[in-house]
Length: 505
Image (cartoon, rainbow, N blue to C red; front, side, top):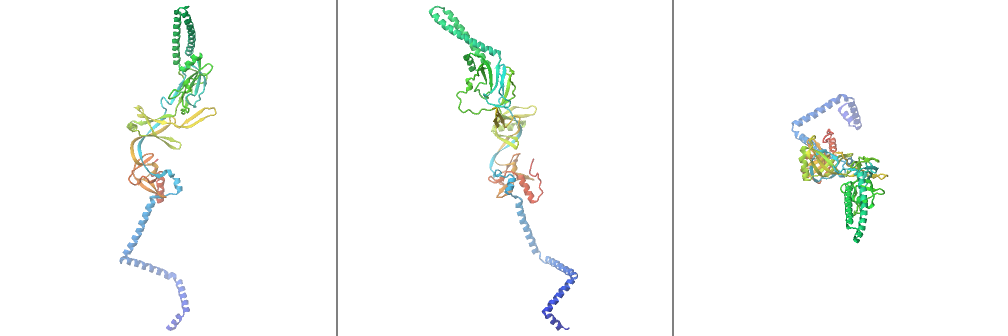
């Protein structure tokens, strides 16, 4: 077959398709033999071209590619840095962290007192808290109206005592006898005055009767004074004179603390009770102020018991006003004196069921003038106004009062030692420490940005932030849960988190 015949064969399109399919099939059969050689040739050619481009000045294009790659990474770092110091919180997250409106408010400048903390205890006021009720005369207890733990007010009946004091009985008896003799002498003098004017009787007889009357009146004055010494009031003595009867029973009532608006010991005649006029509160306003309840403590008298004059029947306690006794070290004495001289407020911290209770604006009463020889501590006393938690009456009419602060309760007292004016003062939970840095979280829309600040002072309750422009008055700061927010930022960045970082126990 010549050359012309081959051209004629391949010029036919149908024949070309057949020949193409045969070549493809032949190549597929020989694939394991020719493909590895072809693949190696392609790889060597590409490597040779890259080496030639690097030696022949193609480095500028490569540097541009590296610069663009580095620029992209730099931009990514900026975005990541902003993301690492900002925290987005949902409404549920805010509730879980306790960031209510109370703890998300603009900060303000305020005055701050740097304090020292000393231990203290609630104590009674000597001479006022405890009131002892005693029997003024010898007698036998007929009835006990007081109940241990009951609250009474001044004027409430406590005891009824049958008098057996011989001297008191004899003095009353002699007084009544002298009163009767005075009446007889006055009638006799009146008769003698008429007969003396007629001359039937000498004037000497009338003069003797007048002297006898004066002696009786002097004796009555002495007996009235003796009854006063026994504890009777002027009204009670007048009742004896007017009624011409002996006082038999003694009624002892709750005393008044600050004044004597009524008689504390009321005596009764043999057939009825006598209430002196002073007990009726003459010229008193229509609405009387509420009397301070007194708690019956240490009830020591019982029905049928014989009591002597001055014997303690019970003790009443007034818990409406108490003292806080602080025990400061001897070196703290200048700080206490400075606080008292400047009139700085004193705070007390009383541990409660649900955390700590703070009492503010307490006033220093006085400082002891001697240091305890054993403990080497200096006592000072702070006034503590008390308040009632419970005030109820039972079906039997007995009243029971529960006071909030109790004698013997332990607490801590904070004494101001330095005054700082117009400072940024935040709760201690509003700041968190990370290494050498302190941070707070400032609200910015729905985000909280972590801001580095300088802490000038920190105690168990507050941190004082330096006003250097990091945060300013008017900025909204999260006033709690800073430690949890710091942990959330570190967890988001993938860093290992120390659960105790910035959190002090």
